[in-house]
Amino acid sequence: MRASTQPLYATQAIQPPRQGRAACLLLGIMLLTTFTLLLTVALFLRALPSRGEVPAAREVRPPPAEIRHVALNIDGVGSSFETALRNPLDILNAAAVAVDKSDKIWVNGAWARLEALPAWTVPASEISIRRAIPIRLVVDSAESTISSAAATVGEALAAAGITLDAADAVSPPLASPLDAATSIQITRAVPLELLLDGVLVEARSSASTVAEALAELEVPLFGMDYALPAGETALQRAMRIEIVRVIEETQVQTETIERGLRYQPDAALELDQRRVLQAGADGLRELPSRVRYENGEEISREAGEPILIKAPQDRIIAYGTKIVPGTVPSPEGPLTYWRRLCVYATRYNPTSNGGNTNTSTGARLQKGVIAAKPQLIPYYSKVYVPGYGRGEILDTGGGLRSTLYWIDLGYSDHDYVQGAGYTYVYLLGAPPADIDYLLPAWAPFSSRPGGCG
Image (cartoon, rainbow, N blue to C red; front, side):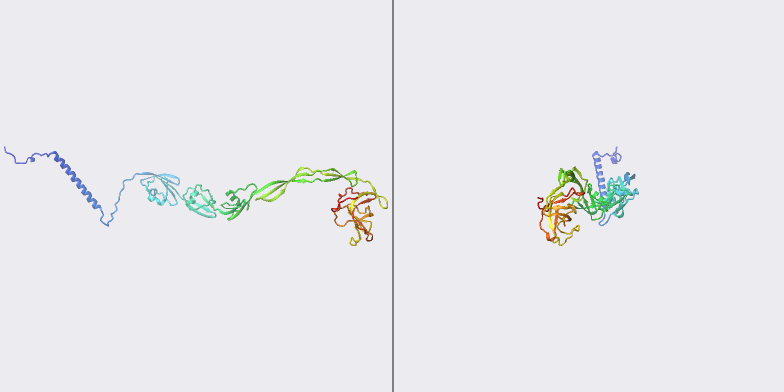
């Protein structure tokens, strides 16, 4: 048999060894990796811009966003809005909610300014808006309108840049809620001076009247205190208000009530004799007065009704009415008299009387004419004076004298005898029908010792 000339693998597959297959696989992987790396580098180099070239913008399509529920609250009215948007301004625009810069906005509970919303990075899940409303504002007498989304009066004024003094009056109060019907009234405080207990104090008040200003400044008026000017006076700038402190008190003075003096006739007692029946005693009373003080100075004093503490007792003196006639010796013999008085006797004549010879009864001045006070010895009384003789009361003593018990013995110029001194004068004859039983009390002449010997 002849051997064939064809190769062996032409008719039978030759199986390479196992180690050769592994090497071939590894080589293939290396070639594929190298090709992938070269392709990546080529693509990267191609993507790099040439020097000075700006790359063209490419539209980046984000992956589909998640649809979320965003809570909207507009002026207290809540709603829900479904959106895939995250920015609060985008969400409001998508929900057709217009926002003004005067509106107040909260995102996720945090206050946010309108101009800050485009750059807001935190996804909005809750958006609240309080719309700005027009508010009537009256400052003193000037009226205007402000737009505010504030919650209270105080916040609205602060947002409008309106500053307040501590004494300014605001109505309604600062903490009051704001709504479309709110009208804010501001009364600016005015400076004033307060004179209180002697101290001048500078203050400010927004009150309308003096009384309201004092209440606002917590200046109390006690009892009868009052203000100058009066409380109903309209308050004015730079006004001075004086507080007048008023005190009224009752003062009591004790006064002695002098005892009275009473005379009563006593038929058993001789004429011109006296006897004390009751010594008497002074009384006592209280005199209350209502005294008013203003700022420490006495303004008035009003006397009240006296209060009797002890009643006075009168001094009672009995005077005699029993007439006991007597006799007095005289050059012509004993003379009967019904009354005897001790007097101070002086003498006068026409020369000492300025040449005047007239008397008060019309009688001519001469010896026997005697002057006396009629309330002591009545006119035309017949009298006897020892050392002078008989006479008649035909004149009255001139001028004021220190005692009623004084007589002037009349003379003519040719028989005038000087002299003066105490003596008795005797009232002669029968007693008259109209006797004055109670003559004035006896008193001496000036400081001379009295008495008749």
